[in-house]
Length: 169
Image (cartoon, rainbow, N blue to C red):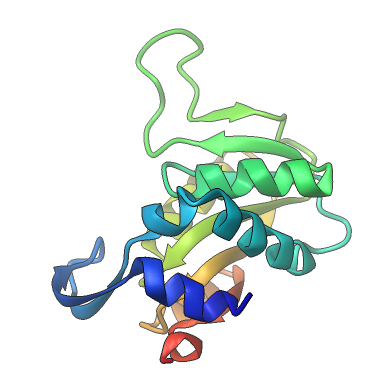
């Protein structure tokens, strides 16, 4: 399977799209299209396993797009998972991080598509404020819109399965 070609086929849209960062783009990757296809998601995660640093103890998936990826990645690697909310729950445990314990663990962020890196930075700063040491993130697609560089300024290393330029097929 040519994974880049398959992602393009199901998820790459052309038009005028407003991104989470507020920027306008003529290309949009509808991540839910590749995340909802079991065969395609399996192949994506099978290749993403190689991006996970060897000493990782917890995979932290960002709400909402990172959740399907981190769940399957956890299953394929045997590494525990945490699910990171944008905001703490207002009921029950009132946590922003559910699942595996993060304190004193080697944690990496798992995300779907990165543009500006804003969602990762926000999550990492919140975790760091709670004593969690984190400096790595992996994603399916880096849109090459400055997110990697912005993350680097926050001491977060981003590794992507694909850069947007890899998907210009």
